Image (cartoon, rainbow, N blue to C red; front, top):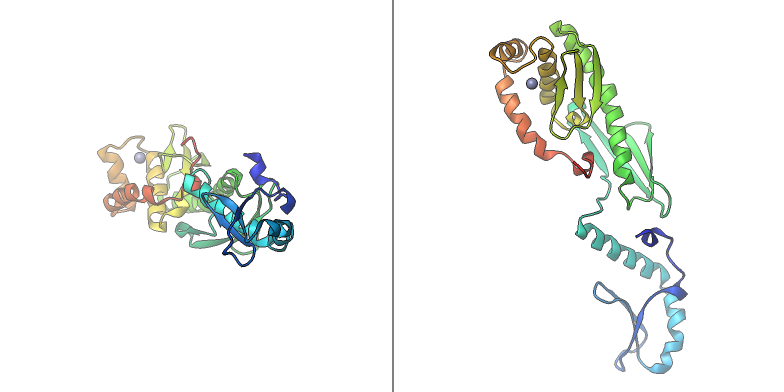
Length: 248
Ligand SMILES: [Zn+2]
């Protein structure tokens, strides 16, 4: 696989087939999924012009072969391409992601000013996903912590520690020690739903179960909890795939 990421070889090393067709008026280049690069020549004598024609069309050949390769790979479903925008409704942010593909170098992610990110390096591996997930966790940490603190003050429910993770099956959890854990993917939900999850976990500080007492407590702060709790289940299906690890 690694050879796919190497800089493109010189045209002299290009793999191609030659086909003679007397009706062809000149040398024709063709690139197809089935046969790759094919050179159609009007006569055997015209073969000597092939290197010249390849050199002249090098940019087009490289671009087309690469596009073909990308199509094959995305069709196989193994490689996912990075998004160009990341919408985080919970905190009302829309991030632009600029792609700077550089073959053969490790992927790098930079947060620029404003709501913009830059992904550079080889974007044909899954490295960019790892970087984006780390970024998402950091973004969630700085957005959800003050939010949880505000709710904690409003409700008088005090937690001990907050951890942000990318859990696969839970939006959040709360332990008997008062540790709250929140899913970074909450940022993809509406602010109403996110706030409900934060509130739900805070209420577990007093009732570590889903008893009637627990729901009564939730209802004090969020009368619409039934609707929100149901909406959460539907929301799980709308998350970007890159937020999940492959083994998830
Ligand atoms: Zn619960």
